[in-house]
Length: 261
Image 1 (cartoon, rainbow, N blue to C red):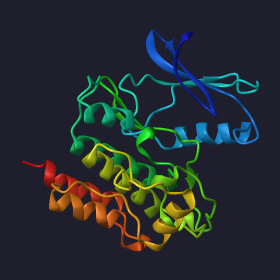
Image 2: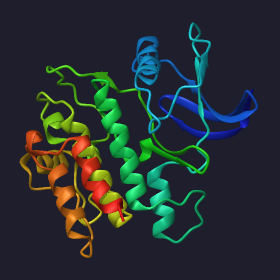
Image 3: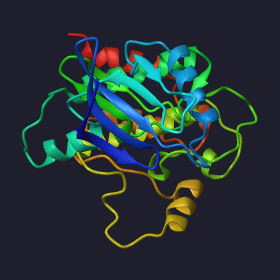
Image 4: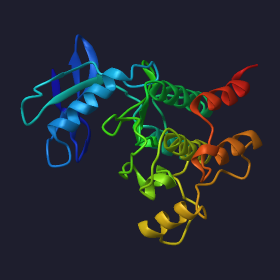
């Protein structure tokens, strides 16, 4: 059952409404098919969610009307919203539905990436708006519309530009390290409670962002009082050379050392 009076979000993909499924609150994604969001891309998203099962990844609960112009996907209801909005509320000391520490959020994302990569897939659009929070369902990586099986010839630029790895912007070959770069950008958001590149006060075009990221002169920053281990992790994740970035499993071990008493 869909509550069309309770819209949770809207975008080029369509709309998301609160609903009920087997007596549980859920989010129902009503997809608007078009030249970009086609039947094929929707089926690929569904298959990716089925394939990449992980407790750290938003799971598919069901779907319907796939043979119509308005197919629907049923997902867990994440009442805490996305990480970007959560951090904005934290920055301004506003009330939040869910309260998690920086380490808890980083731990979940790293483990989610490890599982996704373990299935030989790349998320390709990891960013703070695609990390969802809930008191019941904890923290989940979401939005599998751009997930692809690993292919050494991947060259198409996708995802939010501020979180996109330089090798993707250059339209070169990319693999798992592209997701690690995106994770590094999220780490800066968790530390500063601000959007990537908040420190740049002069107007910047997308082309200037593109050039700065690609030549290594531009990176998101951490706060002055950031712990040295955290800053080192961020810098390694944002390394311009993909092979020098840590793997998701290596990041988990770094975080484990900080979580362990």
